[in-house]
Length: 91
Image (cartoon, rainbow, N blue to C red; front, top):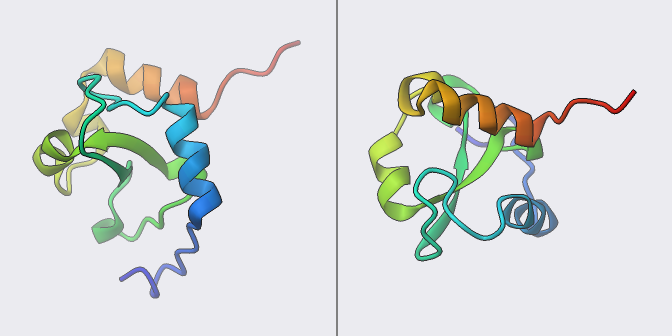
């Protein structure tokens, strides 16, 4: 699947994502068993990129599975996630 979408997420991208999310689960705040998650699932054709990655703990990532972010996160959490990934430009 990763080859089909030409996923090219490397170690420096992982460090960037971990730094962006302060080395804690975006959903519950845990600092244990962290994983990089596809925000929009690979199973639906979305490669892992810096703009499609967040940090979840193993428990939250397992409960998210293949859900779209709008189906998994509350509206407030989803909006927060979009703000983190796509911060508004200063004018």
